[in-house]
Image (tube, rainbow, N blue to C red; front, top):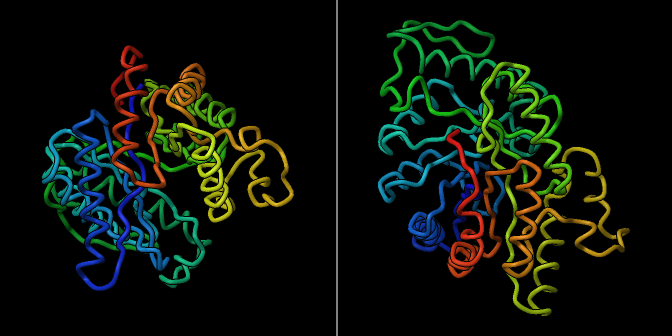
Length: 339
């Protein structure tokens, strides 16, 4: 089984010094993860939240490229409807070059209405803008020399994108998806798949199976590491820590639960009416003692999940080290392929 990180830095404090500290802490976090044997880090992109989330993921990854040697550097995701696709192709290729071919290029259409409103882009244009942007980026990275593009939203005349990415023909494409339509599209169109941290275990396993089957139908060679499954992680040692972890998880679900997709997602928007045990209500997070988390991961592994991207709400180096020292060794002998 392969393990990586998902999330990103948060600016904090007042003024430029305080704002940068959150990023510096995150850089230390990623460098520590690399030393501990984590395979990758996928960084989010968000705008206008007021919560200090990463907005320029490729800029941050360029810095991380200089600070690391082996960990793969992923975007999760670049929201293409908001960007000039040629500038994105140039920036992403630069990260791939500077990192010696370590970029995983995750893309998406976006889903937050406030972000679309902030950019003055109608959200109902997201799909067509995404499709055209990907068309341009593919041309930029695979054309032999200069190319032109005349579309509905973008026009480029006799341009060449430099530098070329180190990975050929281009860095792996990853698509953030949850619906049946988007998962099948990812398989048919050559994307690897990024799955969310909210979906229950059974739904996640079903999505992986759907992607695998669609890849086979499309004639693609399937490897389980082509699917990155995001899971929250909260390691506890006693009852008090467990209760605190459950409260943290419930608060997170209240904040972002409306983003859940797929069967059963409606329950996340009705937390007050739910009275069942937390583990029955929400078995998605890796929550518990190291042995309990190993058991949770074994269930995912038995369902075909081989690539886990962890999200630690505390951002703790202690949690990172405990996960590496007490949980990852249980999967050291698991079969792993190359995406």
